[in-house]
Image (cartoon, rainbow, N blue to C red; front, side, top):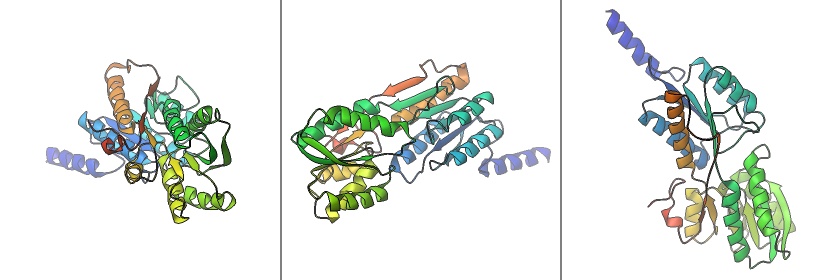
Length: 310
């Protein structure tokens, strides 16, 4: 009777979102909104890899809300998680939450976005945004034939990646004096926001020849607005390596993107968490950069879910 009751309780615990089955180690995965395919890939790959390694998994989205992120980290602490894999909600606002987890004995493995502190997270594994955007910028300059008016859409200001990518674009493009930036706005990584802002910019700058975007969702929004205005020939480039932009490149619309290997980075974080849980060390430096790949029409057909097929 007692054994039957214990088994029943175990079965109920496995179904409750806030509990891991008794005796099973827990990995908590927290990312921005899963409506963005980049972040969904991170969450799906990290969760699947953790399950393969024998962990219970809880996956949450903070939607770039620092308070929500803090609540999820509190939940991870309360549930005695073995590790947290986190794509964070801000380089500064996340520091205290990661420190709280560390103080509770829970290592945090940051992916995609760094925080403005070291020695708190067990690892910070990010794509080499500067290197990847330079590849895209060099192709953009070539496609623009080194002249003409262009627009830049940047990402969310609280995200360190937004600044790194913008700086990388300009370190290349600003070497060419006949390339003139006529507008620069943040579209906060958002496709609808890029669409509406592109519409407004076009009214004031009907002669633009190119658009550089800090991520693929903004590139998709800009391209949609351009096509709606009959200007589908404007040169648009993005960064991330999404399937949507892959399809746009193959259709001849968006010209290029830079692949951030999100799937690989998410798997790396879980594997290093597993190593840390078992040995007390990842065996790696805290800050780790993973190189990006230029994607254009020549290789877009091999891109799938932020990874390259053989």
